[in-house]
Length: 462
Ligand SMILES: Nc1ncnc2c1ncn2[C@@H]1O[C@H](COP(=O)(O)OP(=O)(O)OP(=O)(O)O)[C@@H](O)[C@H]1O
Ligand SMILES: [Mg+2]
Ligand SMILES: [Mg+2]
Image (cartoon, rainbow, N blue to C red; front, side):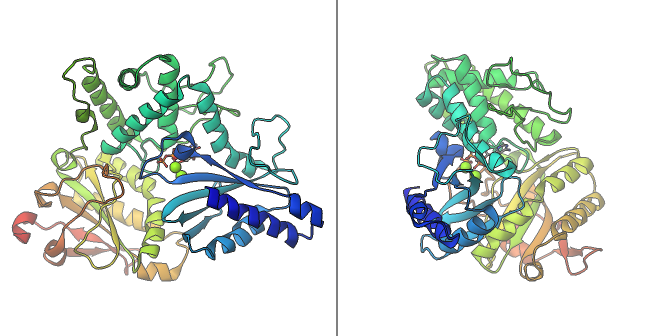
């Protein structure tokens, strides 16, 4: 953060000079960065990114000075790699790696000639340049508000770390895939801490599961004083959680029918386990056991992504993931239920850089024809607006139904709890043999997937 701050400091002076500001103004101007997200709350782990908001003065614009001047300054730094500009998002940002750590870096512009280090964002006279800057500021404001509302910071942090670990291990942590994101869990954890100000960490975790497994959803979770007037979320919102500061909107959520039911089951499981947390022989490790995908589902949808190098793979995976919600909804429509395991596996038998997703399918799911139509829809949605034709040729996507019995017995599909290391998916000979390809009827060059082979995977690979 200190190194980034230094870069921002140089940047704002360079921009002031480029805008021909008077010398005294150039030498006195300043910009800053503010941590938010899990890093700002002090609950980051090895899987977390750093979320840092860049706050700049009136003359430093988002379109040119941030996305062009600052980007090229960052590009020239040896610590920085994999820079991507996400310009069209509600909160536009740069995403890059700094010394290997992922950084989410949005920008807010103030109507001030200089932004000091300790800028007070709750100052009622704060002049924010535009709506986009307000949206970008909201992450920092929400964090600060949460920290103000929790009675005992250390207990809140420890308890939230436990809850995040539970959510990751049980496969219910991924905003993109319709599960909880960091912000949802932070608000739910803060809610429990508010109601139990003197609770030990054990008691807080236990109360979390009791409270939210019995919660009459879609009753909204509201952290602050409930006398604040608010409009109810729309009826499709299954687990509404209110942001704790003005304008008191609802936390964005992608929760679907399937992910709602998986989250509820996991909360219920947590409740049944932690009910006994007062017992002397209570084992907490049981709460954090990885979700047993292989034992739970008879078949999976394998989503195989490959690219010529790691940089392109990152881009490609990000793009395909941004289309995952439509795939999940379509699968739900034809299958009734789908469990989109958020873990990214790697097939080490394939020479190209790759990522494999493995989603649990309903045992009463529909037939292959329906699945083929789901695949075709998904390919259409991935290809629509694909940002480059060369990407289309170099990066590949395959969908394949894999029976659980075809997975090697040794393969435990856990839920990605093992930090940065990724699970190994071995499908070597299986890939080469017995597979009948299916091509998209809309994009004949596009490989939709394979018809699953009849014989058992284990016997195929010995
Ligand atoms: N769905 C959302 N609705 C509102 N704000 C969001 C949402 N997702 C992210 N944000 C904002 O961006 C911040 C960072 O999100 P991020 O996805 O990095 O999660 P995080 O809480 O930092 O957890 P992690 O440790 O997984 O990075 C959140 O704290 C929140 O302010
Ligand atoms: Mg984060
Ligand atoms: Mg982030």
